[in-house]
Amino acid sequence: MKGYLFIVSAAVLWGTIGVAFKLGLENGANYEWLIAGRPLVAGGVAAMILVARRTFPGRWAMIVGLLALTPLYLTYPYAVERVGAALASVLLYTAPLWVILSSRIVLEEEFTVYKVLALALGFGGVVLISMPGGLVRLEPLGLALGLASGVTYAAYIVLARLSQLRGARSEEVSLGALTFTAPAVTIALAPQGLPELGDIPYIVYLGVICTLLPYYLHVKGLKLVEAGRASIASLVEPLVAIVLAVALLGEDLTPPQALGAFMVLAAVALVSLEEARTSR
Image 1 (cartoon, helix red, strand yellow):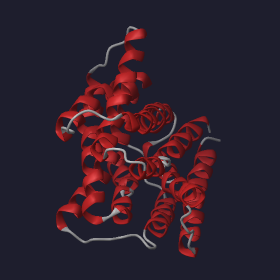
Image 2: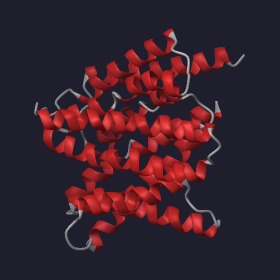
Image 3: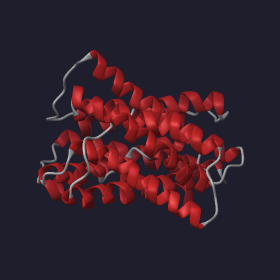
């Protein structure tokens, strides 16, 4: 169960992104630097750690960083901007579907009834958590970007799992991948000017607590847990996000969201039980 602990811990940290981002904007932080600064800080710290360990990123770090994390970082924020945070979040969390479908081919993972049921519960729960009261705008490019974010999130999970099965170390896939993601995202976004002093605490938090640490934990978890199961367990992220929004931002928890939270927890429990059953 150590793998699930890593996966869920990473999801909990990722779940704080929305609150940190919103608090940053409310306190005058620059929108572009909140997006670009996150991978830039994470990549910079990751590079320093790797240099200190005399380790250098290899081909798997480049593959995961450029083919999965970079497009994920670029598609999701613009999907939020075009179709709203609620729908963009739902589209992002189509990732477990793509993971389960692709991992059957790429990783030869078994397609089980437990996974299908857990996926249905988890995705249904995410819809209920994300949609009530959320602003939704149906715009073709925004929908395409939202789906692309789900696909690239799935690509990250599958590639991170595959790379470790092929012998790559966790540090290379997590820390190393961020050293490629950081410059690619910064160049693509090209934020104007330099971040102001008030931007720094939010950028550092997003970069270290919401990126560097959870990616390392998640990759460690993927070494021990099947990609399909890990993707479903990661659905606790939006659950954490809504709990923090209620606790810290004063947002209301609606009955559909409460039901959705229960469904997500049930999905995570289901894949955990399946893991325990098959490991006996």
